[in-house]
Length: 153
Image (cartoon, rainbow, N blue to C red; front, side, top):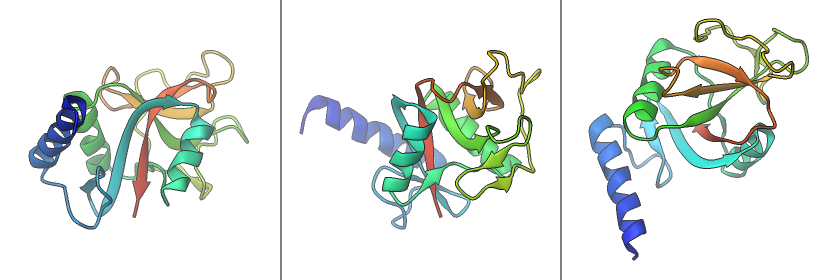
């Protein structure tokens, strides 16, 4: 096992200890919280490619439904895995009508960062979060490359 592999396992171990959310129900490398399994993937993909990747793992891009879940994700990205991450929300069908994918459920609970969503570039139809935004949400162009969070029930 290489030094890089040992370092990755050690980081995962520390994340598991610090959140006490590791459980045998989740695949190796996933974090458990609030009866869900989460995979934080830092290799950047487009929103669509991230969704395909999650589906290949029998999961979907994360659907944040409560403040507790948002807070869990925020703590992980602020303290352990900083970066910008795709979430499962999209408003590409009707501007301003945010839906969780692939279920097409309406995004009822929202945690938008101040001034968001702003459709700043004119085609910001996909949902992200990051440590820079304290775990709050931002709309970004779906073709950008970011990390992503898969969720498995």
